[in-house]
Image (cartoon, rainbow, N blue to C red; front, side, top):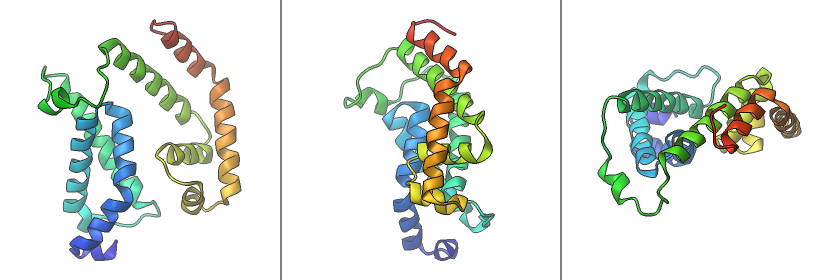
Length: 183
């Protein structure tokens, strides 16, 4: 990190290698399109590179800073997408992804929003462990970041699954979506 802040491009390349999958998964989960996720992930690291000299360690992982940049870019992406009716060439040429109807994308979005809201209702430590796990962070790394043991992380994740399965608000969202209607 310090070498990258000092302008060492090889050190930044190592940071990119370490965190690009996490950022991509975060973005892809929210935008649903591979080419858009790739573009936004690239922009995250471009902004991180430019702003790296201003990064200060506050006890959070570097990934948390990158995900904050990604979250802001996703919000900006959807805010600007409301005002334009265009399909990018990359999305037209992206033949590896099955074409999904707008209804399927809307239902996925409702599921994702409902799940995110349910996770945010979990107790603080359980919520931290769950979000880090959802981003693909290994249990041992979650334990290190939160200053707890890996077995405690597994307990938090188990309890989170049970609470999410029993969450009446999440259940009503999921029931409404699976019936094909809005909750």
